[in-house]
Length: 138
Image (tube, rainbow, N blue to C red; front, side, top):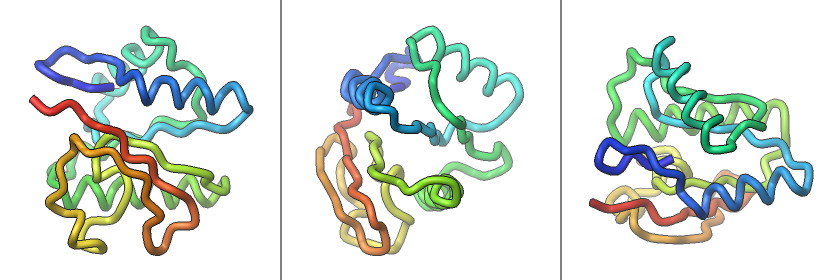
């Protein structure tokens, strides 16, 4: 979901990948940097369900006591992917932000890349491809 102009909108490319994964029987986990508070978790689940995103194994939300920076978000998402990998072989990682794909500072050439970019990456230390979709740029 994209929160452009305070209005949450579905990211069509992500939604299509989500539906494709379900149609071929893959397990989906959602990892977001949204702060994990009781109210925010309820609102996020409501937003997902109202947009037909109802089948997922887990919804990972960033602990609310972590200050959201590029470094902390990428570290949190890296750790969440590691948790998923303890239960499943990850076949691919998809997201619209660079923090969705690698641990900050491990690949310095990516730290200042635009979120508007699209890429397929095979990153060091990962045994699965990362599909970087374009993010909305305001």
